[in-house]
Length: 506
Figure 1 (spheres, helix red, strand yellow):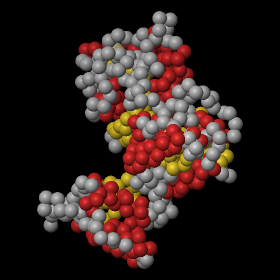
Figure 2 (tube, rainbow, N blue to C red):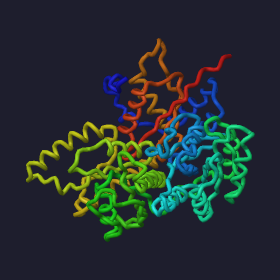
Figure 3 (cartoon, rainbow, N blue to C red):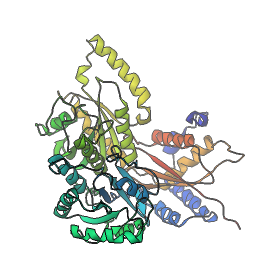
Figure 4 (cartoon, rainbow, N blue to C red):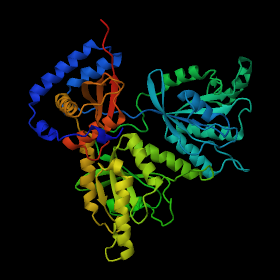
């Protein structure tokens, strides 16, 4: 249902919030919280509600999830193992080697532990053995993980390629589990035992297709996996971390060079020159910042373009490490599906967002063609970027430095709002006034009520509503929009979650 359904007469909500007696609001919120004892609550509700009395400046940081990489030759069953661990069919599985090409990172959970699972795609040795680029791909995949699941087809046994990767794994110093796949029957266990010869310790016999042995493997993995990623760890304090994202050749490297004041990154008209993210500490606006110039994201990443595949993997890792993303868009080109996919990637990550419209120097008012392009661009922004209208926008030229000074204020605003916390009393007063003026429509003869709300975390601001029924997506979007109108949330996504609870039977 559209947000417009909930619009009505002016509610003067901003004025009411400005005149709010905060002490009274906190007392009323405490009464609302206490009334939840009449409802059937779950165990983790108590933890959330206990935190609902935290102050405005009590900022919580979400630790980076530990990263488990699955590596191995093509067709050894890596994607089947991914699907088995996830408990759903996410990764494409075919008998054709090298099917894994596009999406590589998934969020997984086992025994109440959450972690990132990376399906790296297979590599093929050439006639002379594994070549330099393939070796680099394997090293990158290993480098970006906290723990490696090295999958071998136990029926085929160890190959020269497997033995080469074993050398990389030993050199990396990472925790490695040797997974002997395709052991569908206990009678085949001796085939797995033969892999002791690789020198990686005990092989874990599993059948990714049938699920045999996977639970035991995951139990062992959880015992060794750190709680917080050492690779994508949340670095509290120090320079704020900025990921520079965009499709190839939009000017990401030029932007970094302009920030650094020197040529630190190769800039080439050939799209996709940058392969690896290059972390740079630079001074902008009197502050130090850590900038990551990420490899351009392509629409599809094919196996023969192996460097691009791992560049995409590095990009997602850089975003996971970052606090704010600058998505660079080339104003001389129409906004593309690739651009929108990258923005969606940022939204999914929950990072703060700034949109940098680069090559603005090409849109001269004197040139009729460019004047038309500017008009079309405004229409594209209005239509295609409406869902991120809250993101600060800077019109710059990385090449000439035009309006570059506007980037830092936009970054600071986005990060400040990413950290913003609304006190529980204020938030519940906002909800009470909003619902009274614009109640949720009846659904099936019943009207869902909002019992209580609290901000669970920041980074991004995440709110939880306790309700008596499911709130329409349009109503939740309406709450988000009004939150943005009343409180300053420019530059950050807002997450609204629901917990539907029923009244306890007496």
